[in-house]
Image (cartoon, rainbow, N blue to C red; front, side, top):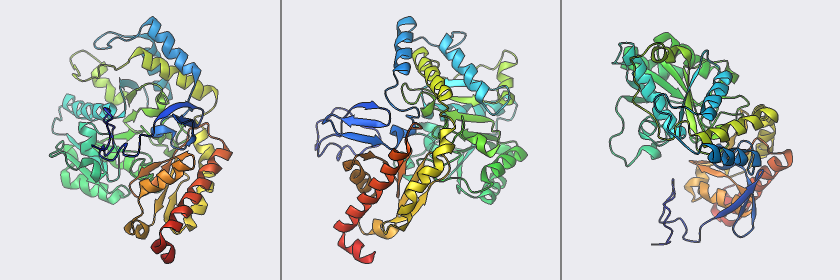
Length: 427
């Protein structure tokens, strides 16, 4: 073995991890991270798209500490409740773009996707339409790695090697309304329960929706009685300048899946916002027992973290930052469009962006992780995604820090180009 760590890292090739030593982080503050050697790095991805209020917020840590001393944890199955979870649900429902919303809490995004999928199928079962079980989703979409999430995910590498996946799912091209309509007609609207979509595809490459696409999806789903489920795990809590992201298209979905930014990562928490019409059969009268739920759903300390995080988002006006900074982020990355190693820059819809590498460079031996490592060596942490490098800094990032991201990206690409003579000659 190349290393002796006992920790099996997620999304990793453990045969390669640690071969040259682990990259071990020690502390964080604001938009900055320090490793165990004392080196400082700009967190240009808000960790895994989630550190929206930045790192080191004592207010959130204190809220968790105080809650642990008061009521550390207890199940919320049946009629059991706690004050932090009830308060959080009330606040999230008030911000939801649908009427009379209800909040189903989970441990994270993957849990929440599975919850939304099961609720969609059970909703139609309760209505006497048990044949409506098919779940539609988009190519390039990422919906976590749980059972339903893996099955409806549109990144093929994340689906490969696991054998048969969940049945009754179908993928459609991520940017085509005609393809969605054709798929619905081919399968039969009477068999389809829900369509899942991220407002801006995140892990699949940072792909903003074509003009009119999300509005068209909502109309098609409404016409055929299909539930429209928005996956806002990455896009929520200010990343797109709105509470759940989807609001900027004026669309009202049936359910919204959330996680990440709801606590800014300080504690693991997720959930599903369920519109009143979908929740009504389950709330109107006894008789519909939903046998689903996470052990830590409504965990009081996690909800205390979320409430403190929401306080910061509201008090500091951070929800709007996704819109306020989107053009600035696009501007600092725009010069990369002229770089010989870059195919295109995708930016301008929220505080997230990606620059995709040239296919010829990739064919010539360049790898996306190589670019991220070059940037890391120069003090900026980014995320390799397929053929692109992604950035999505905390909402507290300043202009000078955004400029640093663009500068380090350019310098890193230049350094790679100089070391790859065939690529340099071709350029």
